[in-house]
Structures are given as C-alpha cells and as structure tokens.
Length: 257
Image (cartoon, rainbow, N blue to C red):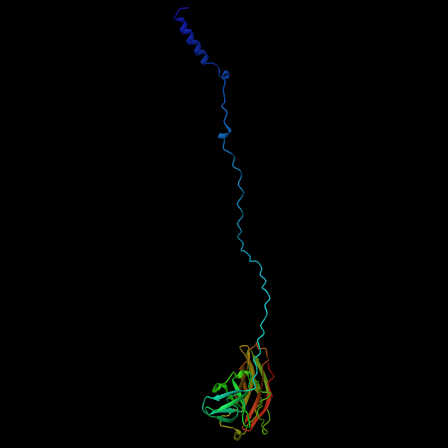
C-alpha cells in the first residue's frame, strides 16, 4: 500500500471507534467511603413540661405547747397610804356623790382595807366607821388592787328608816345602750344633805372593753341610760337606791335586758 493511503485508513479507524453506540460503553461507579457519610442524628427527648402551679408548702403540725395559766393576784389584808391633797372627802359609798362622812387633811396616814373590784375607790379603816376615798388622792404603799373586794357584800350602805325603796319599771336595750326607768320616790327637801344632792344612785356593773367595771350613776329624774358592751366573762347587773341625808332606801334590782 502506498505511504499516503496508510495514514488515511488509520485516521478513519479511530473515528469509528469514538462513534461507538452508548449501549456498548462501560460505566464504572466509584464507591463512596462510609467515612464520608454524616452519622444520623438521634431524635432528641421532648422538653420537660414546665410546672406553672403554685408550690404548696408541706403541711406543718405545730408541736403542742403548754398554755400558761395566769397566776392569781395575791390578796393582802391591808395597805398603808398617805393623803396627798387637802380636805379629801371620805364617803359612805364608793363614788363622789354618796353621802359625806369625814374629811382628811393632806399628809394624814390611813389604812386601806378593801376596794370595789371595778373602780379606783378604796375603803379606809376608820375609828368608828369605814369610808371610801378615790385612790388617786393617796400615795399608796403597794397596789390597791391586791386588797380584798368588799363592795357590796361586806361594805354596805346605811339604810334609812324614813323612806321606802323604789321599784324598777323597765330596763330596755337598744344595741349596747341600756335605758332603765323606775318609780319615783319624793324626798322631803329637809332631808337633802345639800341643795344639789342627787336623790337616786344607780349602781351598775357593766361591761366595757371586755372588763366588768363598777359605775355609780346619779340622777334626780326616774330614768337613766348607759352603755353595756358584750364580751365580759361575768354578767352585768345593777340596782337603784333612794338617797337622803339619813341613809339609803333600797336597793331595787334592775332586771338586766
């Protein structure tokens, strides 16, 4: 074959091989290493629920404690005192409007032997008759509330032979207000101890602030009103006296409403 024809045949052969059918082509897949593949992410736990309720503190049971019992106030037989004002009136009853018995000068030494249990009036021992003074006019050696309660069971008012007791007609309550009405007893003007003397003394043991207090009230008319609150351990009560210069008529007990 000539030198020119041989190169042409070689070129044509190469061209035919490059135009081969795709079906006869061989495809080689390159395997992928497992180290190149991302590890699967495990599913995460769901978030814990948030407790929005108010926390309840644990129940607490207090230990039993002993209740202290108040010690009773010791009672003394008597106390010494000195009058700290001039011309102190000492009266038949524990109040400023009871009949007058005696007068004390400033500096006088006296002996106290009782009190009312519900006011600041104290009972003074006398040579013949005991009488009542207001404790604020005394310098007392001790607490007068440690004295025995003597009114009204021991220290009694003098009784008049000239007048009859009154009669309580009614006692009515409106809330804490109590109104008492009694029968009038005319007193002869000559039997007045002084021109402005009160004819009636209304003694009431009434409740105030949880304490039973003794409150002597005075009137020249046959009615009176006062306050009596609830809350006292002891019952409230009262009575009405007619007063004249020789003593007292009564008492007429108040039917407490």
